[in-house]
Length: 120
Image (tube, rainbow, N blue to C red; front, side, top):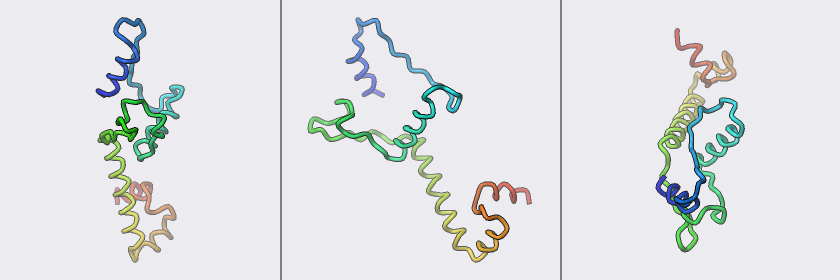
C-alpha cells in the first residue's frame, strides 16, 4: 500500500484538483468489469505475473528486476484449501471402497456427495 500511495503522490501532485477515490464493492453484483477484475485477481493469486517491462518503476529495482510483493493472506488460504482438497481426493481414490462409491455416485468425491451423506 505504501508503494501505491507513493506512486499516486507522484502522479497526482497535491496542488492538482484531480482525485482518486478507491471504493470497495461487493463481488459478483453486476458491476461492469467486475468479472474481468476478479479473473485477473485469481490469476495473480495463482502466481501469474505481469511482464517486468509493463510494471511501474516503483515495483522494479534499479537493475530492472521485479520486487516481490508480500503474499496475501487470502491467496495463501485459497492455495491451502486447494491443496487439502487435492490431497483428500488422492487419498479417497486409493481407497478399496472407491470403485463401489463411484457406482453409487459418479461425481464422488464431490461436495454434493458430502452434503448428501452428512445427515446419515
